[in-house]
Image 1 (cartoon, rainbow, N blue to C red):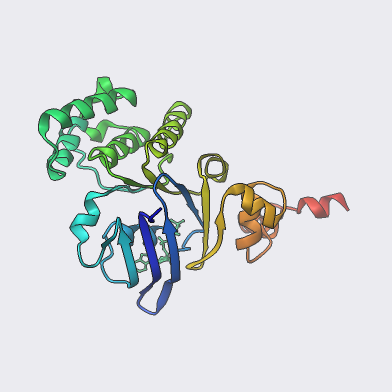
Image 2 (tube, rainbow, N blue to C red):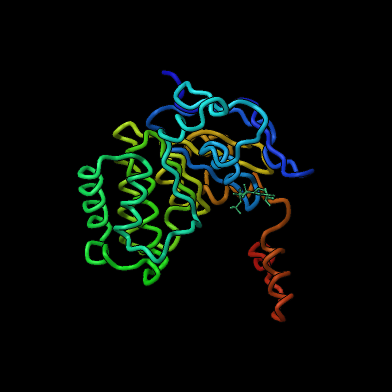
Length: 268
Ligand SMILES: Nc1ncnc2c1ncn2[C@@H]1O[C@H](COP(=O)(O)OP(=O)(O)OP(=O)(O)O)[C@@H](O)[C@H]1O
């Protein structure tokens, strides 16, 4: 099978700061990639490059055989991007915003309206579709963003912390949605800090640390090489540069409390 995304020798610097260092990656149709890493590891930079939002980078990115640098518009048609933080046009209603997005994607209006209505209703926003989004909660806005990323039925869906702000029922809907989209052959690239969700949802986990891929495989494969334990534990083992309990203790001390004692120390 041909990879749907091929990343070769991808590097990116902002000024003198090297953010991505020689990333090589092949992603196949239908995969659910959990893309994880500490704050500042370079996850968002990678997905912004993939979406054509950061045009200057070193290396080659090919999507469905199309070179991103040569044909960015053709690549953008295949990708739905749901950023964690985005400017919504809050004076618009959810319906007006999604209708505008559908227009940008050139989706015929009857088809767009049916999709918008169905998706808003599925997310429990049926009653709110004609309300201005400045009256929406964070979770409601996140749902509208998710819908806008799926409107043009893209083959690749890139989600940056899609569950942020969602209530428990909506989290269940999105997790189910991710599995069903992948079963339909869509490729999901999912950036998150929620290790328990990544562990359950992804069939391949890629761990980025300081701009370099330090682990790549199924959760079971990572466990086989790192020893049994949660993804949170594997993450901490591969990325923690200092003792996390000590760091928490220092923070407590800094705000005037007693330093936290690590569980190991408490036992002795
Ligand atoms: N436009 C920019 N200009 C300068 N530096 C940037 C820019 N965008 C990102 N960076 C830097 O690149 C590094 C990687 O940022 P990035 O947002 O890709 O990390 P991340 O892994 O997504 O982090 P987080 O988990 O905090 O979202 C950070 O040090 C960040 O400060």
